[in-house]
Image 1 (cartoon, rainbow, N blue to C red):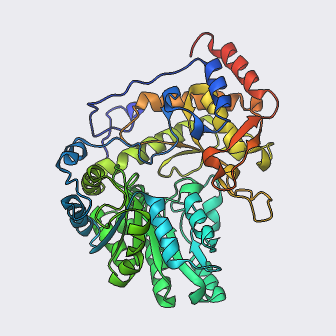
Image 2: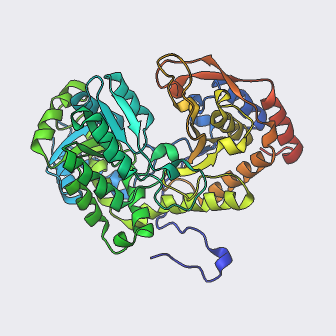
Image 3: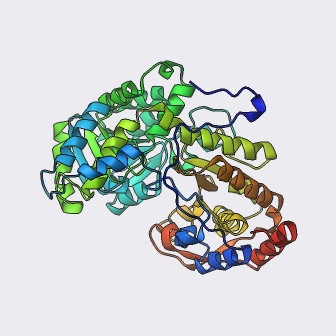
Length: 482
């Protein structure tokens, strides 16, 4: 139940936790921020964290752990095989999801590697609501293809549709029949669909997808990395979920899906990941890849202290007071910027607030990477590090041509239990200033372009001298302020 303030003008998201450990931050002068951005090849991934005031790159592995998670790490059973830490984790999976079979892996993309090795063969197709960068890379690496079946409204930036991550059910059936069920590796639902703005999927849609998969005897897979946020939206926006307990939703999904996997860097605010299932045959098919790629079956590439934190984090992922803080902060930031006229992805989703970069710089062509340019400009304007989720995050077609993204987004992730409301308001202030000076933002071009996952470590340079002009305007408006 929400906490209402006596005076409506004072209504803000209310944290249901207190901060007991702090980390000092730094905010460099704007001229230095410009130099650092250029030294990093205009790639926010290549900035040093010590040079960042607000790290809004991701919520993966940078959420604050609870006191109980930190305490749990002290009981870790540091054994290569047969660690009691793993068996405590397996019991938590059984309690939270109801699944008997658990394969640990060091994070979500490691789970994707195992799934691709086990179920994707050359020329097989994987169907999904929308791809994620590493998911697609693992599938194409083994010769598979990806087809996206998100409903058309999922890629409309501003709307009031509550579940923009839903799969188009008719297209799903048509595609399976057209391809032949034997040619489909699996159907994947991504909860809290990342690349379209952290948009949720309804419980109704997830269950319908599972039913279709069972009808055609095709594997159903749920990427539950962002399931916490997704369940928050289910309970807020979906009538059938309003009075359901969070554990009830977890169990229902696990009962219906053939396989669930997740990154615990998101689900449970720890480190690590896992693949879980009710099906022993599927478990055994995937099991051989864990020692091959990750480690023994009772640690899977995760240090045992993190397994203990992951175990406690799973239980905390049932607590709506923990689940609500991220989405509520995101909604606050999105509403604050939307009211000012800044083009945002709406309705607010999970993971972070997403700037519609194509609308931010509408005259910039895709091949000058508008989302990355807005991200570089935002770091210069405020020491804020976001993440490009647009054409730069795509991979080129086999013939070398660009695959232009359907959406050009600059993601401002909000790690859980990390930022204060004053910091969120600072972020809003700097984005508003950048919006008012958006005509100064220019494009980027490659200096060094890697062939795979180029957004992680590729380098670009500004086209012209727009970054120097941006610094000059900042000094004009802010004087000697940082």
